Picture (cartoon, one colour):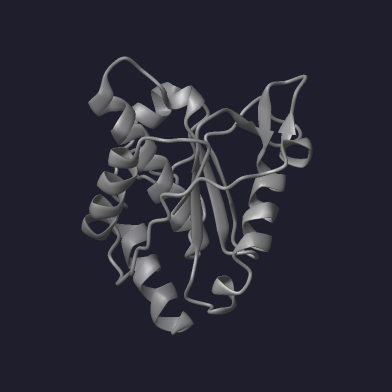
Length: 177
């Protein structure tokens, strides 16, 4: 996991500890607590005041290209800010499986309830990690892999994979390795 901008290190450590409890395949999770020093001109839209999610992911790929040469490696970045892709006003996260890179944007997940905020960020990290490991969106609205178009949908879904997605994930990982 790689933060962009200064983000709560306790949050990232908590997410790192929770992921193995929720992802039914073996993972080694490394945490970079050093925010990237970046040129915002390519990855930030100053008119919209939002990060360009595709460009963020491309930047992450360039920074970690050597690490990502191992087909079992993924990068998930937690970005302190708002993100978008062309055609959408905002996104909670974006996975680019072909690059093995994803980013999660915290701005619209924020709330005064610290526990709820942490859970929202964790759900989105797990969701994007699921995409990186081969899963698509799930039709089960309670599954962490269901598409969330609103914060209410993020809150409604569970942090866990449904049984069907869990089985698919195990099958994909068996095939991949």
